[in-house]
Length: 255
Image 1 (cartoon, helix red, strand yellow):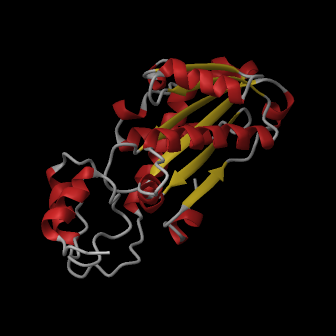
Image 2: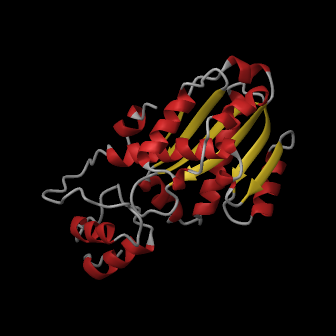
């Protein structure tokens, strides 16, 4: 998984994908969708799809995929390597959404909330895989918002596909577990190798998990705040955690 394209320009979004196995062009496939990094105030959100030939579905089950949240970073990396060695019947695609893109989308005049952004990203990935020639027949999705409404939305957009949307789908369906691992591995690598275009001076790069309730994350947010220019692009400035610090410590601006 080479994230070089995103690392060179981490202010927007980037779509990456594996080669499509010939088996997935020739016969029906199942596809799973999941994300990583929806809640953190730091770093990107990554959406991933993983697809597998239905003729080799049992072999996917034998790879022992699991919900990425239940695994250590080392275990996720190992499982991703296992997936990557199965390229003759498994493929994946990612869409990495930068913190800057997330925040600007949510704060534009025409409201575009995180659920809508998530739905559109998932739809875009399904279409990307179909356009690449994958013979998708079944889609399994970890829900964002009410599962029934999301499922209806996807069925209207892709009436030819059998769509199943469930809460905790990453622990119910191996193909969604595989997508979960792809997404989490990509986000972990993007956060670890983040290139800061801003000069942060002596600020230490110990920012914890990136989740709002992490004391290390809160401490780092307080340290890296510029009273005039605000936060580096690594921060989702639309999150209430960041906004609270901005309102209390940054210089007021009148427009």
